[in-house]
Length: 487
Image (cartoon, rainbow, N blue to C red):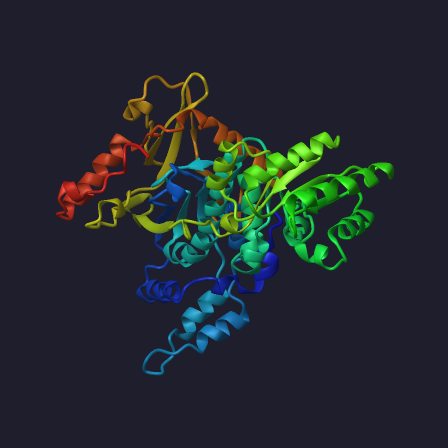
């Protein structure tokens, strides 16, 4: 089984990793006898975060671990058995609690692999199976996919702004709890960060770990030079010196002195770190001091509340920075606290093989959902570049690219792949470095769409079905909320 921190920490509690209303609905399905009816749910988001066009999908491996380990323990059942309604009566009866004790996941799951670039209204996951099971997993799947995708997307934006420079994730101390720090480190690595400061993430996921020292180290010694000399004596092969505790440029000069001492011992000064002040001006001056002293290979690392916008500005100002330490604004997804992914019922089986398609209507057009057993097909042109995406029903025989109106296409790829078949895992999540490499390749495919709208449309069959369901419910077409023709 793919190794993730999720089951190691939460394995005893998988059944209760949900909201109460999922259990009350499940109990209702069970009591009314419809719990075993086959249903299809889709997990998607409506708006791309950070003002961008799409997202980098992430979190599937943790979702796989969750679904493989989903159980209600004796302690879980005992806890649920002690819940009471407003009249002091048992919230759930004994028969339902016995069902939960025997619960085993048996759905089919389709999902976009981690690292794939996705767009609004495209299902990131589709779950087909008994209604009660597909309902129970909603909260946990949203928890695992939403935050992971959000941070991976933020990381990809930061990496793009860095234009090939090294990017380090330094956000554990500002993350939303220990698990938030772990998930952020993993997602940031998928998005393209080169290393993390988080040792637990390094141990669990095999992510490279990097770090320097803090201002407190310098302040513990009589002067800065003594502090640098002491650090270089204990970390000669990993000597990156934080130079801005007192006077930044004097700190660079002291780093040069220590660098010369290191060379005499057969080592090199790996780098210096700037953590305050005008990073553009200071990095240029620091580079000049280092180069004139013959330390052309010594890296300059910058930190201090960086994100993609700050890095872009610093590069425009001519900053001489080789590596960027990005923390708070990455792990907290600064500017976009949540992805806003949703989980909606899109079909319910009336009899074996006979589906009744479901639509959620709204006076807010974008909240009207797409009905059916959904799949996403990505078309490519003859140069191998994405030409557009088609959302269609998986039962459609031959959905084509003509709906895209984007010229000739060479081939296509269906983005949702089978992950579980009747509760059995049929997909092995790849090792994290492969996910990261796939993400990089995926993002590269969309470079040509920078500044242009990428087409995402419904198939003609899906459009007709959606309109028919809207009209059946007497909702004006102007309120229909068609999937947008572009993102």
